[in-house]
Length: 184
Ligand SMILES: CC(C)(COP(=O)(O)OP(=O)(O)OC[C@H]1O[C@@H](n2cnc3c(N)ncnc32)[C@H](O)[C@@H]1OP(=O)(O)O)[C@@H](O)C(=O)NCCC(=O)NCCS
Image 1 (cartoon, rainbow, N blue to C red):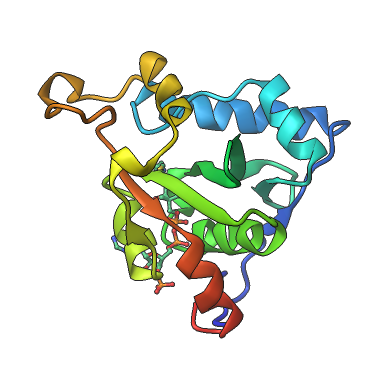
Image 2 (cartoon, helix red, strand yellow):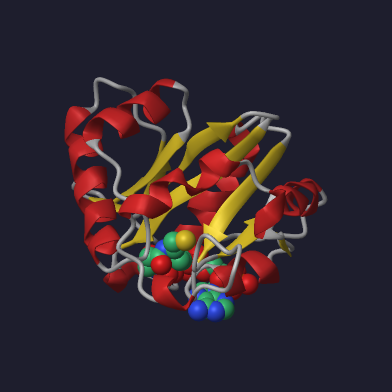
């Protein structure tokens, strides 16, 4: 596998447990920062705790245990589809490999048959570069769009008929195959 984190980085990836309240609280604050910008859905400490209980919350922490990045398998839909989300890296740590390390780490851990993500202008180019494939919104279970009701995203009023979300929905499952071949 290509080395993701920059050489000499003091950042490490951890998978917190429910008892790691300080980490869960920081992750919730980090995600809220980006949720308020309309880039993702908020995650409470309780929802993050449930993800942590399944080992499906990944956090990037620095040497002082400050959370600088997060990613999670946030939802499981009927039919074996899981959603990757809460993908956030503090601006000063972006483009140093932290985001990719969080994504690849989680994809390795999950046993879901299919993983999808709601990609925005930041994440969609990365998903596609890594081998993700764009999905038709109609192929998703209606439950996938329930969080859209409370999302702060911009541009909802411009949605075409039948479209429920401003994001591009991407199938991340091909990335798992690429990763197994050591290509990402
Ligand atoms: C999306 C995000 C998590 C990515 O994290 P990151 O730490 O900056 O990403 P990385 O440094 O690991 O980069 C991963 C790869 O994507 C590439 N990349 C990064 N930003 C890119 C962009 N805007 N366009 C194309 N490629 C990009 C990097 O070059 C790297 O590829 P490489 O390994 O081939 O060099 C981060 O930008 C972020 O927190 N954005 C704000 C919140 C957000 O919009 N999250 C997405 C919600 S769906």
